[in-house]
Length: 260
Image (cartoon, rainbow, N blue to C red; front, side, top):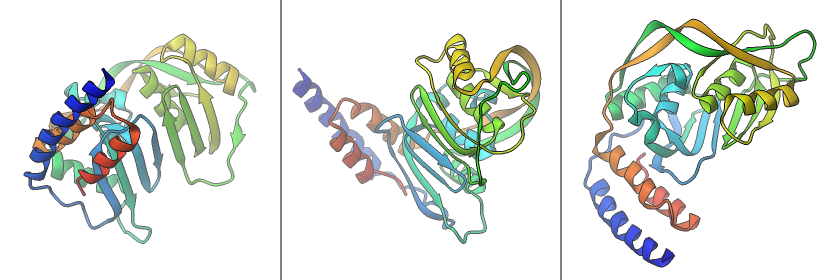
């Protein structure tokens, strides 16, 4: 049965590959040291100040990084969260442009993205620390690096705001940092499922932090226009078709058909 699934998957893959090859692909900005968008191969993501390395990141997540706004405050079509890609995006060390500005350029060039900001009311979780109960490991530097895996996060040299951003992606609801804790810290947090009580228990036991429901007026990013385009549609489809294939095949196909 598994072999039959793989054979059918290969037939579909060959058809999608043909469509990708026939499409003229916009070239990435010269500001990147390395840039590639391929079919999703997994769920692990690593985001730093000058690089993204992801096995399967959504368009919504990329917009979130590009505009420094949590995913839960991005208002746009549902497919922004469905279409996932493996992405390698590394800024040149000597480059004058930031990763955020380069990502904005890529999203505009490849997806015709247009956005605007608007103030809206949101149901939120409010992150806070009572007294001296927080158990945090202070970082020595300020070179933020965040790794996100299903049910787990590791952050190096990150702020409370960075922690809130990761939590709200897991919970699907805005998390507002009201801890009044400044500085940079190293975090490691694990949880068994993406629900409020489970994540709250992990926060309490792991970091000595708490959150509670609330409502706040926050800035939202409104997506006025976005197009997936034939190229990126085909690459996303390739990720779905190769989902049950051996990992070595998935990585090989993704690299071979990546857009640069």
